[in-house]
Image (cartoon, rainbow, N blue to C red; front, side, top):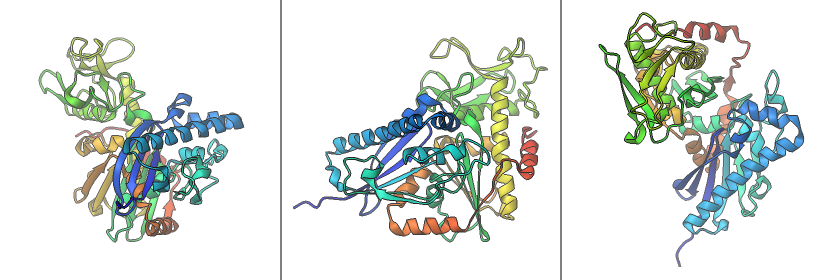
Length: 421
């Protein structure tokens, strides 16, 4: 008789997308991955919009909870159907996500996150029958979610640190989950420090003039001819350009800085004369693709407001990194491991990020980039011993609040200009 495997379901609830892993419990092997849109997007692309909607009235919060639970259950149903599995084979569920996504999934109030000091009321790990979390077909499964760190650093942070190897004896590590809200953790022999950078939507490119997700046809690399300033753009899938994704915007800015198209203070250089630069009119911009070469028949550009938005986002991240390194009493030369995750972070060219001043250079660090740090950590949290270790790690963790911090503010302001070279 063929042995029936037992499985776990890992769920990373992102602001834009929800990632589900079906994990074979015997060896924590990912059997199936599914990514579905977060249906809460219709109530706002960012978490603050959803918090605002939620606190207006109780029915709104219940609506957001029902939407995300339905999306996860539909995803589970699709996986079970695809693999022809009995729901009874699912024994464990692990849920991770930022604080807002976590609270809305578990039907917890987000009112404390709507006003200063933006603290999380419910930070304890969640242990409950999966059926109580909306998984009506999983009557015998357990549901677990790791502790919330604080404020907007949610249950995805312990998962990310677990995936980044923070429980291993290695020292002097940095782990970053780059997105609308960027979580950054620094580990040294003296402890672990963590903070979040309000990096905004720039790196997901959705708020840029010609921004788009990292999909087929998105510009993801840019080179610029030194003499003519003509751009050469690479796209995901090699398709005709449809827009520019976050990594493409960073690549473009790095190349524009190298060619003097952007000045260190962030302004487009009005002393240049090129057909690829439009410096007249109310908004200046650099043309990445003209209308004859784009898939839409419209120009694809990097505008002055795009540059300013990325400038602010990269300064927030650089400021947090600088402050955490200071707290950990580390120099960049002492960092041994840099772990970068998030859909944006996994495709980011580290050299481009350093060129625009988003990251310092870590000359002695081994760099790992991976799209799913949080979901990989959720997979590992299927193991009870890992849960204990992750929860113990948080007891030795120091959370640093950036809001209202003069030390962060000074670093942020100092990080706003682009490096001259």
